Length: 137
Image 1 (cartoon, rainbow, N blue to C red):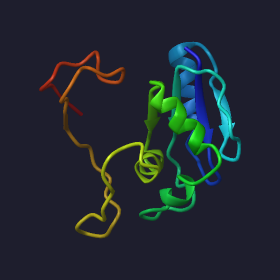
Image 2 (cartoon, one colour):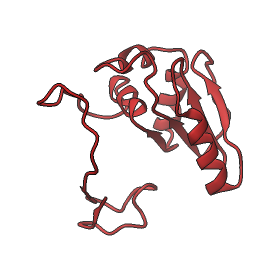
Image 3 (cartoon, rainbow, N blue to C red):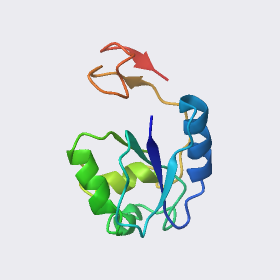
Image 4 (cartoon, rainbow, N blue to C red):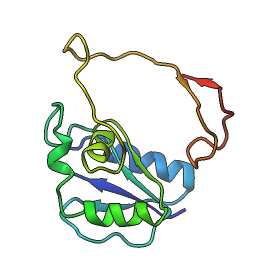
């Protein structure tokens, strides 16, 4: 599997993602700097978390307008899976690659707790080993 990890200023989880991908796939992913405009042929693009542009709601709006994002959008449209984690998820929402918007939580404070997710579909490269209706932690 050829993969790429996108690196933004302030990211602090890109190295963890690089290590995880290498352990899982046996191949080191490419690291792509946010100011680049091209992504070589890959099977997966990951935007890791790590508070690029600060730990604020909508900080992903800045990253969503960086030079690498058109290339990510083109690859996503061509069917390449794109995974956004933490701040990376926010970036994908702000870039319009995922529907919806993020909202402030009710307490306006940082919340860190385990959650349970219900698998809605197994028709995805990320969920194909699960069954619809299965609850994962």
